[in-house]
Length: 216
Image (cartoon, rainbow, N blue to C red; front, top):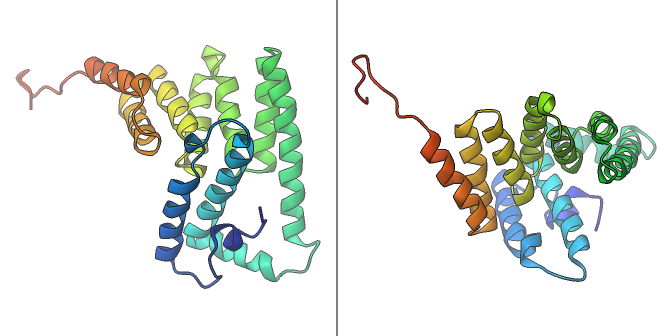
């Protein structure tokens, strides 16, 4: 897939904000990884991540202006620096995944944290940071924050939304948890596990009471 965000979305550089959003929704419906199984799914997931990154960059006016400037800079300038940062970040992600598989969660979290520092727009790195940090109770707030950032960068990624829902429930923020779970249902369709989690959250929520103890 092309590195040019406009090419990824199949849009001209002068596309309007409305056109960008409509095109993203169209591609998201067509190419969401949950629609595919078996051989080739890894490529579909990579393509979907590229589509999401392109939308996130172009849907925000400030980041779009910065991106448009990189298109007119000569090779080896800031755009080259950004590409190098992304490669370094992926190297840290790979180290983190290896450490996580070996249950070295501190080492994994440190590598994922370095990845997010090198490339703050890498949604996958933020997701993995949340996953690794959640393995230690003392890190749960940091884990929830990382998962939330992953969802900001990839708002239609069901796995990221599910993790955020789970982590915010664990740190005692049921409203945020329910919001992430609901988003996961919106983009991923029916899921008994997510629905059960939402039902449990509703059971644990206490009704607001008025001054005299009655519900407001």
